[in-house]
Length: 286
Ligand SMILES: NC(=O)c1ccc[n+]([C@@H]2O[C@H](COP(=O)([O-])OP(=O)(O)OC[C@H]3O[C@@H](n4cnc5c(N)ncnc54)[C@H](OP(=O)(O)O)[C@@H]3O)[C@@H](O)[C@H]2O)c1
Image (tube, rainbow, N blue to C red; front, top):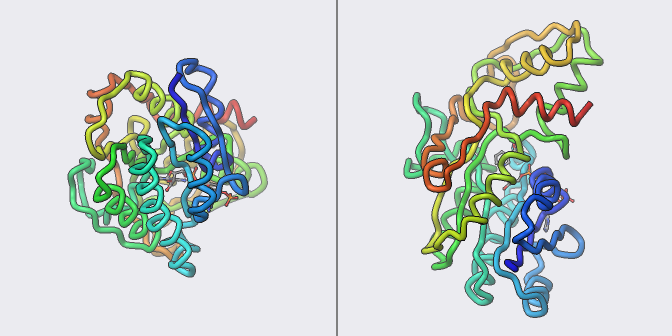
């Protein structure tokens, strides 16, 4: 059986992999998070791989606080870039394939049509910069694996926009939501299930391949908040506002829709519309 280690297993995406794992009997899963497996502790990782044969590592660990990263660039750099370099070296020594996740925030958001995998990266904040650096370190390590860029993750797990808005809509009379940033919401349960579906097809690995994966369709944060409200029926007023009226520490891309044609075609995947994924997520949250 193919032995798959998922690290960062208690995060939003990590928990989604745990949820989907039972649908893939061809894999033997090992789920680890802090403190059993610390991505910044190379000695611990070395010991783990010495004693546990591993075919595939799915890395769900990241520094994901976009605004906080502006205050803590060193920490973000350590986890999103340097730790990926170390993990890549371990992949080389121990021969496992590395599946790593990256973000739409590696792009600057000036595009007007969906970003393809090959387009130039130009992150506009620390989080995106450190994720882009992690990608580059993995790509230059001479290993086999995938970098899967995704965007606007939501799920019943952890902290995310859908859960935050779901709670605000029930507790506030009115809220302001940014209406001039466009992207594709992605259900972490779809991302994890489709990643495993792709791996289950016994793909041939040859270097590091980059893929984009999101749910189908796109919207703004305001559009997403409105769609949540439609499904839970509250009286809260949702006011559309410009980014300028809602200043945050980190700059965010204005448009970050990712073209997912490559992963869809290579693995015969058909990600559902974000609206139907949202319905499923809200059912699970309620
Ligand atoms: N969230 C999004 O909207 C979004 C969008 C695009 C791309 N992505 C990418 O998708 C991936 C998954 O994101 P996510 O939202 O699932 O992240 P998350 O919920 O923040 O999960 C990250 C996990 O990593 C763990 N972790 C932190 N430091 C660690 C260390 N030194 N060693 C081991 N584990 C450590 C965290 O534990 P603690 O909680 O205990 O710190 C947490 O369980 C990331 O690569 C992210 O960049 C996310």
